[in-house]
Image 1: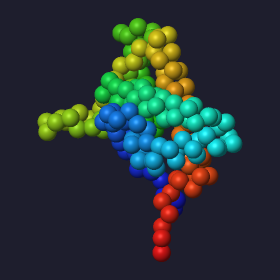
Image 2: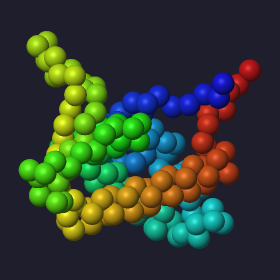
Image 3: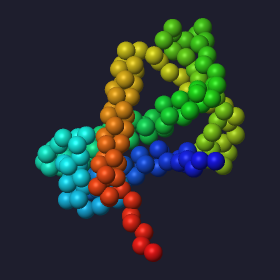
Image 4: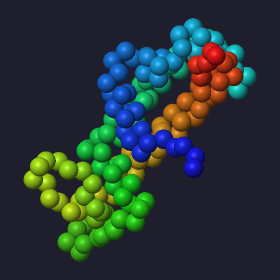
Length: 169
């Protein structure tokens, strides 16, 4: 069976982003020295960046990661937890007492919030409006850009022989 990342990996990554006070993608991702990373990015034929542009992306990467962390971890992680439940068949319910733009997501209660927490189901209420849709679109676009950036970074580091530590016999 192929090895996959643990289901907690995205959450753990975004928590690490929030804890990171250095403002450095080098430190956040535990990358090689900045000069080596910048050189790898600047010499990558796919990226066509100058060293200054490559250095700037390392700073911008942290800013983008913080934006995504705030979205991912915000509001008690309601978007993440509801999405994860919805993709596995959670029930979405519109009750007549709700405005037409509101609905509930009824799903198994996954997180224990205290010793006396006996909830069997969560029922977060969503209001679908222009602001919510625009916010989700912005988050999805930012996440896609971050994935493309990290993929390009990994490819450039791999091509420069910097992605994995060399094991000596």
